[in-house]
Picture 1: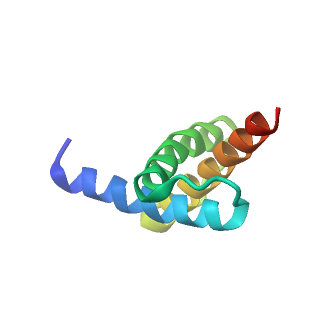
Picture 2: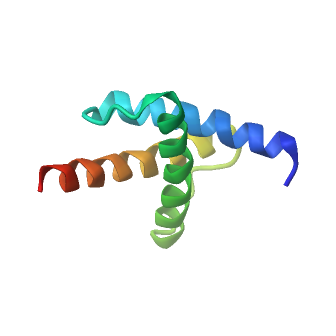
Length: 84
């Protein structure tokens, strides 16, 4: 894994985490937490999109959309768990 791919993961994770927190709200994770939520969301979104055979395209926009969808699912799960 190169330094370039790590930087791309951090940037995509940050963007996806910010978008998900803005849309879902209720989870104030801070700057590093937001990036972690986005990166975990990328894994979840990639798994879900693969499971459902959803293909948006290729490139950085696809990665951001996939990570955003996964981060939104992750934040919804966290909100449900916190309410219980």
